[in-house]
Image 1 (cartoon, rainbow, N blue to C red):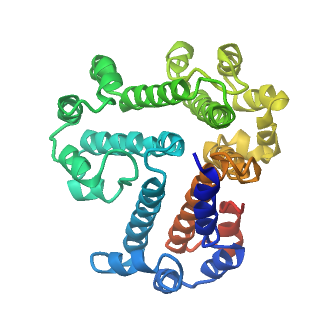
Image 2 (image 1 turned 45 degrees about the horizontal axis):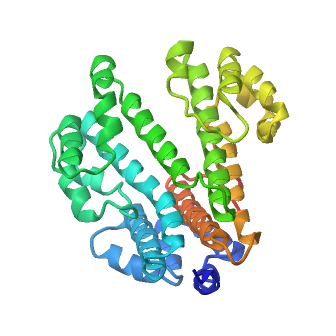
Image 3 (image 1 turned 120 degrees about the vertical axis):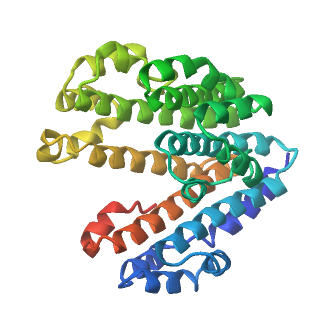
Length: 349
């Protein structure tokens, strides 16, 4: 296929991403209305204008960001339709199907309103707004899974298989873990045949599996979860952390010891976190470091072969990072955090 054409289109879109100066300007806005006004003068103008009709304040920003992300990747799918690139883009967009199903299941489990669930969804994957709306209408988790099965939407398979365990333990993490494992296994199988593009995607997916597993292990250690129970939530197929390494991390039963074990891996940067954070078991700080690493790894693909899928995948991560940064800025504005603290939360790439 003509990756030159695709990447030229994507690089044009990349040129419209917000630079450091634009993000700095948003940081300096005194409140949410000022931030909305700033976004109204940016490439998000169309989405902000549409969101204002129904929402105000931070909900307006959240709605605009969701719609912008969805519209952006629907646009990319439009000009790569029936090409090799479409297959790779869909691998990354399918994660939003998984995330949306998780969100709906969580909402049903804790009995929040349909409106609250809908406002948290990002219909950027295979499941469009109409499909998601029908899933939201279901009365409980079982009905959601049954609807997925009726429509033969493949995510019903891991959910159906793990549902008896969910009922026994009343632990939504059982269903969420089953979805994650299914997603990564399916994605890796899609790119298992050796090629430049397949290897590139597989490497990113395996890195992400490492990050997800490290997060899981840190939480399990903090919460004192039984070793065998915790091991059941781990995902196979990581880049540098195989099954033996993961079990070694779990067996430390200590966050600081686990970080020491990671000293010989690319995740050694976790040891740079202040000792007090680790002693207080503030997992969120460690998770943010891992997320920043993952984003930077993804964005770096821009520098790879220009006649491959690299630029498209790099753009995906850059756009995801931009929207995440705007969301962080907006939420921090409602929490009266200092500009210095806010800047520490952002990822500049």
